Length: 397
Ligand code: PLP
Image 1 (cartoon, helix red, strand yellow):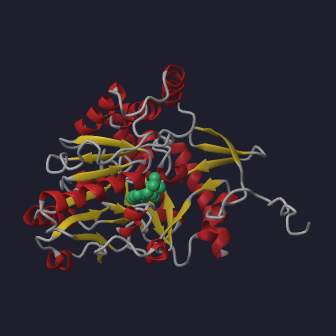
Image 2: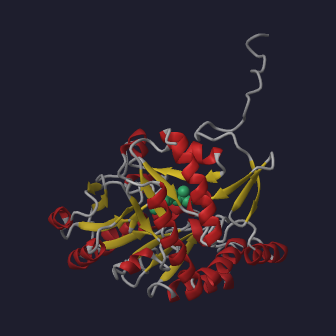
Image 3: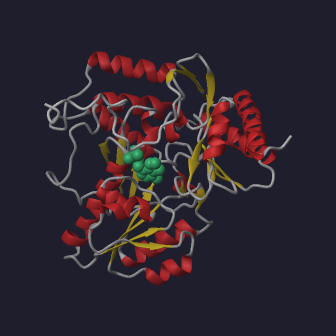
Protein backbone atom coordinates (compact mmCIF):
# COMPACT_ATOMS: atom_id res chain seq x y z
CA UNK A 1 0.00 0.00 0.00
CA UNK A 2 2.68 2.44 1.06
CA UNK A 3 4.41 2.06 -2.33
CA UNK A 4 1.35 3.07 -4.30
CA UNK A 5 -0.07 5.79 -2.03
CA UNK A 6 -0.13 9.16 -3.81
CA UNK A 7 2.53 11.62 -2.72
CA UNK A 8 1.37 14.51 -0.55
CA UNK A 9 -0.05 17.31 -2.68
CA UNK A 10 2.78 19.69 -3.57
CA UNK A 11 2.40 23.28 -2.35
CA UNK A 12 2.56 24.36 -6.00
CA UNK A 13 2.08 22.41 -9.20
CA UNK A 14 4.29 24.86 -11.10
CA UNK A 15 7.76 23.86 -12.26
CA UNK A 16 10.46 25.38 -10.09
CA UNK A 17 12.42 27.08 -12.88
CA UNK A 18 11.62 30.64 -11.76
CA UNK A 19 12.48 32.48 -8.56
CA UNK A 20 9.21 34.32 -8.04
CA UNK A 21 8.53 37.11 -5.56
CA UNK A 22 5.46 36.34 -3.43
CA UNK A 23 3.51 39.45 -4.52
CA UNK A 24 0.43 38.64 -6.64
CA UNK A 25 -0.57 41.30 -9.14
CA UNK A 26 -4.22 41.14 -10.05
CA UNK A 27 -4.78 44.34 -12.05
CA UNK A 28 -2.98 46.99 -14.04
CA UNK A 29 -3.88 50.60 -14.81
CA UNK A 30 -1.55 52.55 -17.08
CA UNK A 31 1.86 52.52 -15.35
CA UNK A 32 0.48 51.01 -12.14
CA UNK A 33 0.18 47.43 -10.94
CA UNK A 34 -2.21 46.55 -8.12
CA UNK A 35 -1.73 43.48 -5.93
CA UNK A 36 -4.33 41.26 -4.25
CA UNK A 37 -4.21 43.42 -1.11
CA UNK A 38 -4.95 46.55 -3.14
CA UNK A 39 -1.42 47.97 -2.85
CA UNK A 40 -0.37 50.08 -5.86
CA UNK A 41 3.09 49.81 -7.40
CA UNK A 42 4.53 52.02 -10.09
CA UNK A 43 5.68 49.74 -12.89
CA UNK A 44 9.15 50.65 -14.17
CA UNK A 45 9.85 47.22 -15.63
CA UNK A 46 6.85 46.62 -17.92
CA UNK A 47 7.11 42.84 -17.57
CA UNK A 48 10.70 42.93 -18.92
CA UNK A 49 10.28 45.70 -21.50
CA UNK A 50 6.99 44.34 -22.85
CA UNK A 51 4.05 46.57 -21.87
CA UNK A 52 4.82 49.41 -24.30
CA UNK A 53 1.44 51.11 -23.75
CA UNK A 54 1.20 50.22 -20.07
CA UNK A 55 -1.70 48.23 -18.65
CA UNK A 56 -5.25 48.42 -19.96
CA UNK A 57 -4.51 50.98 -22.68
CA UNK A 58 -7.88 51.63 -24.37
CA UNK A 59 -6.49 51.35 -27.94
CA UNK A 60 -4.88 47.97 -27.23
CA UNK A 61 -7.85 46.65 -25.23
CA UNK A 62 -10.28 47.67 -27.92
CA UNK A 63 -8.18 46.19 -30.75
CA UNK A 64 -7.72 42.80 -29.11
CA UNK A 65 -11.29 42.63 -27.80
CA UNK A 66 -12.63 43.35 -31.26
CA UNK A 67 -10.29 40.82 -32.86
CA UNK A 68 -11.10 38.18 -30.24
CA UNK A 69 -14.77 38.55 -31.03
CA UNK A 70 -14.11 38.43 -34.78
CA UNK A 71 -11.43 35.79 -35.39
CA UNK A 72 -8.61 34.67 -33.09
CA UNK A 73 -6.78 32.07 -35.12
CA UNK A 74 -6.62 30.71 -38.65
CA UNK A 75 -3.15 29.14 -39.33
CA UNK A 76 -0.56 29.99 -41.92
CA UNK A 77 -2.23 27.83 -44.56
CA UNK A 78 -4.24 30.91 -45.52
CA UNK A 79 -3.59 34.50 -46.49
CA UNK A 80 -3.42 36.96 -43.63
CA UNK A 81 -4.38 40.59 -44.23
CA UNK A 82 -3.37 41.46 -40.65
CA UNK A 83 0.13 40.01 -41.12
CA UNK A 84 0.48 41.91 -44.40
CA UNK A 85 -0.48 45.15 -42.69
CA UNK A 86 1.83 44.79 -39.70
CA UNK A 87 4.74 43.60 -41.87
CA UNK A 88 4.32 46.63 -44.14
CA UNK A 89 4.32 48.95 -41.13
CA UNK A 90 7.49 47.41 -39.67
CA UNK A 91 9.21 47.68 -43.05
CA UNK A 92 8.08 51.30 -43.47
CA UNK A 93 9.86 52.21 -40.22
CA UNK A 94 13.04 50.17 -40.73
CA UNK A 95 14.46 48.79 -43.99
CA UNK A 96 13.21 47.03 -47.13
CA UNK A 97 12.38 43.58 -45.87
CA UNK A 98 10.11 40.57 -45.54
CA UNK A 99 8.71 39.59 -42.15
CA UNK A 100 8.18 36.22 -40.51
CA UNK A 101 5.92 36.29 -37.44
CA UNK A 102 6.37 33.99 -34.46
CA UNK A 103 5.56 34.07 -30.74
CA UNK A 104 8.63 35.11 -28.75
CA UNK A 105 12.11 36.56 -28.85
CA UNK A 106 13.89 33.25 -28.73
CA UNK A 107 11.84 31.97 -31.68
CA UNK A 108 12.70 35.09 -33.62
CA UNK A 109 16.40 34.37 -33.04
CA UNK A 110 15.85 30.71 -33.91
CA UNK A 111 14.53 31.67 -37.36
CA UNK A 112 17.55 33.92 -37.85
CA UNK A 113 19.80 31.03 -36.84
CA UNK A 114 18.23 28.70 -39.38
CA UNK A 115 18.53 31.36 -42.09
CA UNK A 116 22.22 31.79 -41.22
CA UNK A 117 22.84 28.05 -41.56
CA UNK A 118 20.94 28.05 -44.85
CA UNK A 119 23.11 30.96 -46.03
CA UNK A 120 26.19 28.80 -45.47
CA UNK A 121 24.86 25.36 -46.42
CA UNK A 122 22.63 26.15 -49.39
CA UNK A 123 23.99 29.37 -50.88
CA UNK A 124 27.68 28.83 -50.07
CA UNK A 125 28.08 25.01 -50.17
CA UNK A 126 28.89 24.85 -46.44
CA UNK A 127 31.85 27.22 -46.74
CA UNK A 128 30.60 29.55 -43.97
CA UNK A 129 30.30 27.45 -40.82
CA UNK A 130 31.38 30.12 -38.27
CA UNK A 131 29.04 32.30 -36.18
CA UNK A 132 30.26 35.24 -34.10
CA UNK A 133 28.49 36.81 -31.16
CA UNK A 134 29.51 38.99 -28.22
CA UNK A 135 30.25 38.64 -24.52
CA UNK A 136 27.34 39.95 -22.45
CA UNK A 137 24.79 39.24 -25.18
CA UNK A 138 21.51 37.42 -24.61
CA UNK A 139 19.35 35.96 -27.36
CA UNK A 140 16.90 33.56 -25.71
CA UNK A 141 16.50 30.06 -24.30
CA UNK A 142 15.95 27.66 -27.20
CA UNK A 143 18.96 25.66 -28.29
CA UNK A 144 19.82 27.85 -31.29
CA UNK A 145 19.40 31.02 -29.23
CA UNK A 146 21.43 29.81 -26.23
CA UNK A 147 24.16 28.67 -28.59
CA UNK A 148 24.72 32.34 -29.62
CA UNK A 149 24.37 33.60 -26.01
CA UNK A 150 27.72 34.14 -24.33
CA UNK A 151 26.97 33.67 -20.63
CA UNK A 152 27.99 30.05 -19.83
CA UNK A 153 25.20 29.67 -17.25
CA UNK A 154 22.61 29.73 -20.06
CA UNK A 155 24.57 27.44 -22.39
CA UNK A 156 26.71 24.93 -20.60
CA UNK A 157 24.01 22.78 -18.95
CA UNK A 158 22.65 22.07 -22.44
CA UNK A 159 25.78 20.94 -24.26
CA UNK A 160 26.52 19.58 -26.77
CA UNK A 161 25.38 22.60 -28.76
CA UNK A 162 25.36 23.00 -32.55
CA UNK A 163 28.83 22.71 -34.03
CA UNK A 164 31.03 24.56 -34.68
CA UNK A 165 30.46 26.42 -31.43
CA UNK A 166 29.73 30.15 -31.66
CA UNK A 167 32.79 32.35 -31.05
CA UNK A 168 32.22 35.05 -28.41
CA UNK A 169 34.21 38.27 -28.78
CA UNK A 170 34.52 41.32 -26.50
CA UNK A 171 31.56 43.68 -27.03
CA UNK A 172 32.71 46.92 -28.63
CA UNK A 173 36.27 45.87 -29.51
CA UNK A 174 36.55 46.70 -33.23
CA UNK A 175 40.14 45.43 -33.56
CA UNK A 176 39.34 42.02 -32.03
CA UNK A 177 36.24 41.76 -34.18
CA UNK A 178 37.99 42.67 -37.43
CA UNK A 179 40.79 40.22 -36.64
CA UNK A 180 38.25 37.38 -36.21
CA UNK A 181 36.21 38.15 -39.33
CA UNK A 182 36.81 36.09 -42.47
CA UNK A 183 34.91 34.76 -45.47
CA UNK A 184 33.98 31.59 -43.55
CA UNK A 185 31.73 33.51 -41.10
CA UNK A 186 28.03 33.11 -41.96
CA UNK A 187 26.55 35.47 -39.37
CA UNK A 188 27.30 37.95 -36.59
CA UNK A 189 24.78 38.39 -33.74
CA UNK A 190 24.57 41.69 -31.90
CA UNK A 191 22.28 43.70 -29.60
CA UNK A 192 22.59 47.49 -30.09
CA UNK A 193 22.09 47.80 -26.31
CA UNK A 194 22.71 44.63 -24.34
CA UNK A 195 19.68 44.43 -22.07
CA UNK A 196 20.16 41.31 -19.95
CA UNK A 197 23.93 41.86 -20.02
CA UNK A 198 23.62 45.08 -17.99
CA UNK A 199 22.17 47.74 -20.31
CA UNK A 200 25.46 48.12 -22.18
CA UNK A 201 25.24 50.48 -25.14
CA UNK A 202 27.42 49.51 -28.11
CA UNK A 203 30.22 52.10 -28.32
CA UNK A 204 29.83 54.66 -31.15
CA UNK A 205 30.90 53.17 -34.46
CA UNK A 206 30.79 49.55 -33.33
CA UNK A 207 27.62 48.59 -35.19
CA UNK A 208 28.92 50.39 -38.29
CA UNK A 209 32.16 48.40 -38.04
CA UNK A 210 30.16 45.16 -37.77
CA UNK A 211 28.07 46.19 -40.78
CA UNK A 212 31.18 46.99 -42.85
CA UNK A 213 32.93 43.70 -42.01
CA UNK A 214 29.77 41.66 -42.67
CA UNK A 215 29.46 43.27 -46.09
CA UNK A 216 33.17 42.74 -46.81
CA UNK A 217 33.07 39.06 -45.89
CA UNK A 218 29.59 38.10 -47.04
CA UNK A 219 28.29 37.45 -43.52
CA UNK A 220 24.74 38.20 -42.34
CA UNK A 221 24.45 40.90 -39.70
CA UNK A 222 21.77 39.79 -37.24
CA UNK A 223 20.63 42.61 -34.97
CA UNK A 224 18.64 41.43 -31.96
CA UNK A 225 16.17 44.19 -31.10
CA UNK A 226 13.90 42.00 -29.01
CA UNK A 227 14.42 44.36 -26.05
CA UNK A 228 15.40 47.62 -27.79
CA UNK A 229 12.91 47.63 -30.68
CA UNK A 230 9.51 49.35 -31.08
CA UNK A 231 10.66 52.79 -29.89
CA UNK A 232 12.03 51.69 -26.52
CA UNK A 233 15.42 53.17 -27.41
CA UNK A 234 13.92 56.53 -28.42
CA UNK A 235 14.07 55.62 -32.12
CA UNK A 236 11.80 53.05 -33.76
CA UNK A 237 14.79 50.66 -33.75
CA UNK A 238 18.07 51.13 -31.92
CA UNK A 239 20.29 50.17 -34.88
CA UNK A 240 19.14 53.48 -36.40
CA UNK A 241 21.43 55.39 -33.99
CA UNK A 242 24.39 53.97 -35.92
CA UNK A 243 22.89 53.85 -39.40
CA UNK A 244 24.01 50.23 -39.64
CA UNK A 245 21.15 48.46 -41.41
CA UNK A 246 21.11 44.75 -40.57
CA UNK A 247 20.44 41.82 -42.89
CA UNK A 248 18.17 40.26 -40.26
CA UNK A 249 16.43 41.89 -37.28
CA UNK A 250 14.79 40.04 -34.37
CA UNK A 251 11.77 41.54 -32.59
CA UNK A 252 9.33 40.47 -29.87
CA UNK A 253 8.53 41.86 -26.37
CA UNK A 254 7.19 45.41 -26.89
CA UNK A 255 5.69 44.67 -30.31
CA UNK A 256 2.55 43.10 -28.83
CA UNK A 257 2.30 45.27 -25.71
CA UNK A 258 1.81 42.09 -23.64
CA UNK A 259 0.25 39.74 -26.18
CA UNK A 260 2.84 37.08 -27.13
CA UNK A 261 4.43 37.88 -30.47
CA UNK A 262 7.76 37.74 -32.26
CA UNK A 263 8.96 38.79 -35.67
CA UNK A 264 12.07 38.22 -37.73
CA UNK A 265 12.72 40.75 -40.48
CA UNK A 266 14.85 39.70 -43.44
CA UNK A 267 16.51 42.21 -45.76
CA UNK A 268 17.06 41.52 -49.48
CA UNK A 269 20.23 39.46 -48.91
CA UNK A 270 18.37 37.06 -46.62
CA UNK A 271 14.73 37.02 -47.60
CA UNK A 272 15.01 34.04 -49.98
CA UNK A 273 16.79 31.72 -47.53
CA UNK A 274 13.80 30.11 -45.79
CA UNK A 275 11.75 28.60 -48.60
CA UNK A 276 8.29 27.04 -48.32
CA UNK A 277 8.40 24.13 -45.90
CA UNK A 278 11.75 25.05 -44.31
CA UNK A 279 10.36 26.91 -41.30
CA UNK A 280 7.05 27.77 -39.68
CA UNK A 281 4.99 27.89 -36.50
CA UNK A 282 1.32 27.20 -35.85
CA UNK A 283 0.48 30.31 -33.85
CA UNK A 284 2.90 32.74 -35.50
CA UNK A 285 1.13 35.83 -36.78
CA UNK A 286 -2.36 34.86 -35.67
CA UNK A 287 -4.97 37.63 -36.00
CA UNK A 288 -5.10 38.29 -32.25
CA UNK A 289 -1.37 38.93 -31.98
CA UNK A 290 -1.46 40.98 -35.18
CA UNK A 291 -4.25 43.16 -33.80
CA UNK A 292 -2.08 43.83 -30.75
CA UNK A 293 0.98 44.61 -32.89
CA UNK A 294 -1.02 46.95 -35.09
CA UNK A 295 -2.49 48.80 -32.10
CA UNK A 296 0.93 49.22 -30.47
CA UNK A 297 2.77 50.32 -33.60
CA UNK A 298 0.04 52.70 -34.70
CA UNK A 299 0.97 54.79 -31.65
CA UNK A 300 4.58 53.89 -30.93
CA UNK A 301 6.08 54.94 -34.25
CA UNK A 302 4.52 58.42 -34.36
CA UNK A 303 6.84 61.43 -33.98
CA UNK A 304 4.89 62.66 -30.92
CA UNK A 305 5.27 59.32 -29.17
CA UNK A 306 9.02 59.26 -29.86
CA UNK A 307 9.36 62.84 -28.63
CA UNK A 308 7.61 61.78 -25.43
CA UNK A 309 9.93 58.76 -24.95
CA UNK A 310 13.01 60.93 -25.39
CA UNK A 311 11.76 63.64 -23.02
CA UNK A 312 10.90 61.09 -20.33
CA UNK A 313 14.25 59.40 -20.91
CA UNK A 314 16.12 62.64 -20.22
CA UNK A 315 14.04 63.26 -17.11
CA UNK A 316 14.62 59.74 -15.81
CA UNK A 317 18.36 59.79 -16.51
CA UNK A 318 18.74 63.12 -14.73
CA UNK A 319 16.70 61.89 -11.77
CA UNK A 320 18.54 58.57 -11.51
CA UNK A 321 21.89 60.41 -11.52
CA UNK A 322 20.63 62.40 -8.54
CA UNK A 323 19.11 59.45 -6.64
CA UNK A 324 22.04 57.14 -7.35
CA UNK A 325 24.74 59.81 -7.13
CA UNK A 326 28.16 58.32 -7.71
CA UNK A 327 26.85 55.36 -9.75
CA UNK A 328 26.92 55.17 -13.53
CA UNK A 329 23.53 55.56 -15.26
CA UNK A 330 23.44 54.39 -18.87
CA UNK A 331 21.16 53.21 -21.65
CA UNK A 332 18.99 54.58 -24.40
CA UNK A 333 15.45 55.90 -24.37
CA UNK A 334 13.52 54.10 -21.66
CA UNK A 335 15.89 51.15 -21.35
CA UNK A 336 18.16 52.35 -18.57
CA UNK A 337 20.61 50.76 -16.17
CA UNK A 338 22.17 51.92 -12.91
CA UNK A 339 25.54 50.36 -12.15
CA UNK A 340 25.43 49.15 -8.54
CA UNK A 341 28.36 47.89 -6.48
CA UNK A 342 26.63 44.62 -5.66
CA UNK A 343 23.99 42.23 -6.93
CA UNK A 344 20.79 44.26 -7.55
CA UNK A 345 18.47 41.76 -5.79
CA UNK A 346 18.37 43.76 -2.53
CA UNK A 347 17.66 47.01 -4.37
CA UNK A 348 14.90 45.40 -6.46
CA UNK A 349 13.26 44.05 -3.28
CA UNK A 350 13.61 47.38 -1.44
CA UNK A 351 12.10 49.23 -4.42
CA UNK A 352 9.17 46.80 -4.39
CA UNK A 353 8.72 47.34 -0.67
CA UNK A 354 8.45 51.07 -1.46
CA UNK A 355 5.96 50.42 -4.27
CA UNK A 356 8.23 50.56 -7.34
CA UNK A 357 8.82 47.67 -9.72
CA UNK A 358 12.28 47.58 -11.28
CA UNK A 359 14.42 44.63 -12.34
CA UNK A 360 17.90 43.21 -12.31
CA UNK A 361 20.32 42.80 -15.20
CA UNK A 362 23.80 41.33 -15.47
CA UNK A 363 26.96 43.00 -14.20
CA UNK A 364 25.33 44.25 -10.93
CA UNK A 365 22.94 46.47 -12.85
CA UNK A 366 19.54 47.76 -11.81
CA UNK A 367 17.34 47.81 -14.93
CA UNK A 368 14.50 50.21 -15.65
CA UNK A 369 12.21 49.67 -18.62
CA UNK A 370 8.91 51.41 -17.81
CA UNK A 371 5.91 51.51 -20.13
CA UNK A 372 6.74 54.07 -22.82
CA UNK A 373 3.60 56.06 -21.93
CA UNK A 374 4.94 56.93 -18.45
CA UNK A 375 4.19 60.56 -17.52
CA UNK A 376 6.50 63.19 -16.05
CA UNK A 377 4.62 63.07 -12.73
CA UNK A 378 4.92 59.26 -12.61
CA UNK A 379 8.67 59.50 -13.16
CA UNK A 380 8.91 61.96 -10.26
CA UNK A 381 6.94 59.52 -8.10
CA UNK A 382 9.15 56.62 -9.22
CA UNK A 383 12.30 58.59 -8.33
CA UNK A 384 10.93 59.41 -4.86
CA UNK A 385 10.25 55.72 -4.23
CA UNK A 386 13.66 54.66 -5.57
CA UNK A 387 15.31 57.26 -3.34
CA UNK A 388 13.61 55.70 -0.31
CA UNK A 389 14.69 52.23 -1.48
CA UNK A 390 18.27 53.33 -1.92
CA UNK A 391 18.36 54.90 1.55
CA UNK A 392 16.99 51.65 2.98
CA UNK A 393 19.63 49.51 1.22
CA UNK A 394 22.61 51.77 1.89
CA UNK A 395 21.47 52.75 5.40
CA UNK A 396 21.86 56.43 4.45
CA UNK A 397 19.78 58.97 6.38
N1 PLP B 1 16.80 38.59 -27.23
C1 PLP B 1 16.91 39.58 -26.34
C2 PLP B 1 17.80 40.75 -26.65
C3 PLP B 1 16.22 39.52 -25.13
O1 PLP B 1 16.35 40.51 -24.24
C4 PLP B 1 15.38 38.41 -24.88
C5 PLP B 1 14.65 38.28 -23.61
O2 PLP B 1 14.94 38.89 -22.62
C6 PLP B 1 15.29 37.41 -25.85
C7 PLP B 1 16.01 37.53 -27.02
C8 PLP B 1 14.39 36.21 -25.63
O3 PLP B 1 13.07 36.62 -25.73
P1 PLP B 1 11.89 35.67 -25.15
O4 PLP B 1 12.05 35.64 -23.68
O5 PLP B 1 10.63 36.34 -25.63
O6 PLP B 1 12.08 34.34 -25.78
